[in-house]
Image 1 (spheres, rainbow, N blue to C red):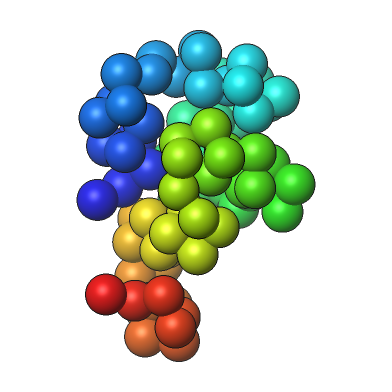
Image 2: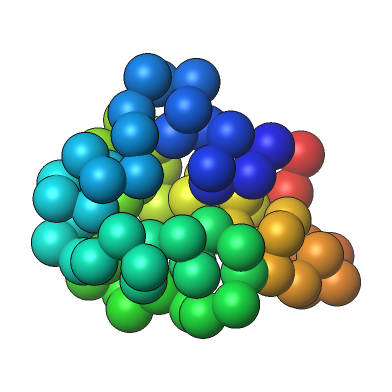
Length: 77
């Protein structure tokens, strides 16, 4: 499941998530598409806003950005 899918499953719009995380909607959407890596502090705020762990956030991010990285991630399901 991608970050966008997790966000939508929580009933959050891109605009409301961007406010919670402290970034622009443009930056949020680029991160969700895997075009831009999130800063660590942003990733932690994002995970907190979604109610998931940092490891879960990383799995959802890499699923879209670079699926090859999942084989190196201990959080892989």
